[in-house]
Amino acid sequence: MKRTLLVFPILALFLSSCSVLNIFGGDEPAPPPQTLEIVDFGIYDGNTLALQTDSVPKKLGTTFGFRFMAKAPEGGQASIKIITTSPGMINPARKEVEFKTETTDTIQVGPQYNCLFTFEQEWEMVSGDWTLEVVAEDGSTVKKIFQVYNTQQ
Image 1: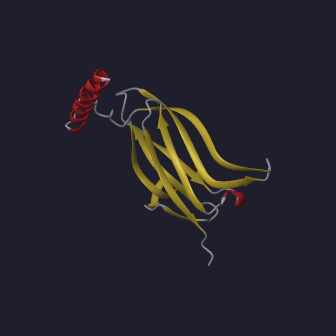
Image 2: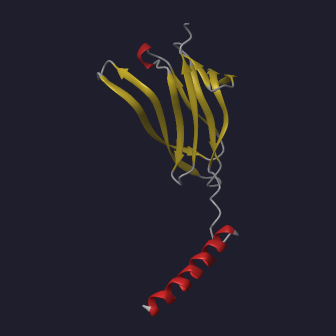
Image 3: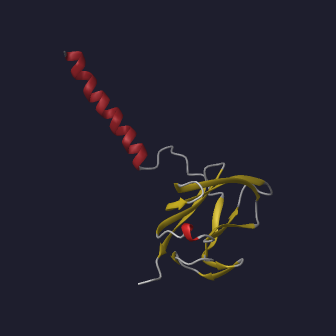
């Protein structure tokens, strides 16, 4: 019984010393720098930013999203995944609700790339939160949430 009582104060001192190290910085590594960066976002006309906004009218032909670039690895390429998440579009060809689409690509470091969505079909125009996201192979992520709204009152 005496041996057990002696262990508790030692354990408490050990745990408190670990907590003090974490409070004052400890040995935690700094987070890695972001590989991806958003350049601009909003509604686009062709390849030109027409309006910087995260509110998007539900209208055929409207293109929204963001432009981004990869900053590392210097002079190299980055494998990315582009993820589009919608409130749920009912694709009449498949007769099922689509919430998410994913594509992969390889991009060069330095140039700007588009992460855009264009309302090309009536069934694509769904009100609510749309998330456009790019994830690099190193785990870096850039994403933007757009609120698609009905223009009719």
